[in-house]
Image (cartoon, rainbow, N blue to C red; front, side):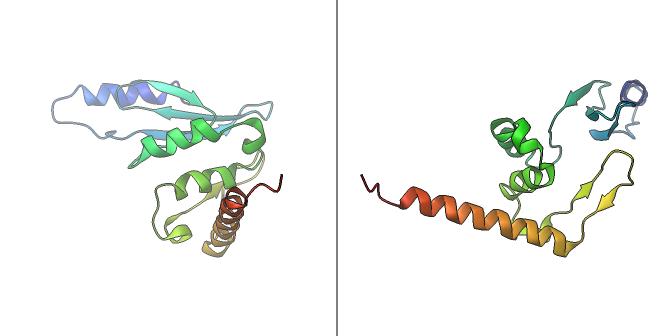
Length: 140
């Protein structure tokens, strides 16, 4: 799908005054063997495979966070990693974050506001504990 969609997007951008695909698109899914895949398509016709990526306003800041903090360990809890990244740019905590989870063989699951708020509160507590640990003087 990621190979077929971008050429169509690019074709439409060449017609005068027509740009129905003027945005980037994220396509997520699984290969037949269950390997997760994430692709970003561009109106120019390009597509790129990613392990973690962001599009839209403030994408640069979120992408930089993901590049710095992504590892196989953090990827194990992708929802938490995504929320941590979004909290770098989103105001008002979890109130402005929507989360969808796709697991192999299951339907897309949208997390409720309450579920997102629990994740955000956990992240905020972890950040506070990290700050406290940094401020503690060495006892050596």
